[in-house]
Figure 1 (spheres, rainbow, N blue to C red):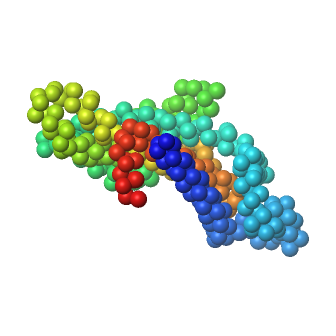
Figure 2 (cartoon, rainbow, N blue to C red; figure 1 turned 90 degrees about the vertical axis):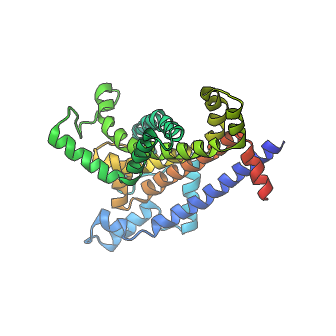
Figure 3 (cartoon, rainbow, N blue to C red; figure 1 turned 180 degrees about the vertical axis):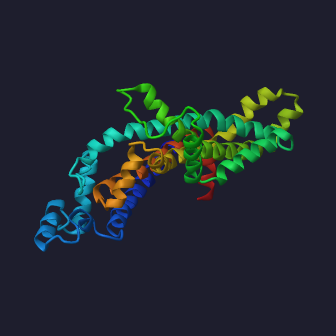
Length: 321
């Protein structure tokens, strides 16, 4: 019963947060400097042309009516039409989202395969040469911005070749090998920072568990290192690692904006980049809302899973209240 009530509170908080975020997104997009009518019609448009464009785009309605119409459309799967190209936003998202999702998924897989073991290795060898190497790699990954690393990669590939190519994207249905090959560089750039963050978080979580009394007692009992890692370290260090991984899932959607633009990948990120330049409200607010939904839902799922793995988190929260 306590778990059910706790879960319901978490779900309610997530829904409230999503509602507030949707209002902020809707308002922020309309407060952006510039007017999309100037971009679409140009400075020489007549008042009649501007009035007709406003009427066709629905911008003549009260702001509150525009917001509720947008929310109803989103809930029904209708994200509206681009103000600039008059193309269905839902159709564009459906075509581009698989590309961005593939980049994010591949990055997440690489991050888990490399980041978690590197964090464990660095924590277990703290004070030795191997642990120092892990810390240096983590520090470099966290310090180098994605746009700088992507620029360096583009320069290296353009200058040295290295058997890789940029700007040769092809849909998976037409050429699967070319599709995956075009994603190697973007995934590598995104993975560099993500691996560093996960490795550092895993290292900190494991080192915090290593000084717990039950771990010290296990060492005193003469239990083998493998047994201690499997039965004491992994589960107790899992909650903070799951939290940071959940946050990375949402961050990856934002990170793809940079790498998709630099590596000329026609995903959701590059689509949002173009829409921002055009002040295309329908695309911008829907894309940002999608990122917010992914972040909030992922955080909710991570909270639920983490508290199942480690009930102490739920008990700690209850004690604070």
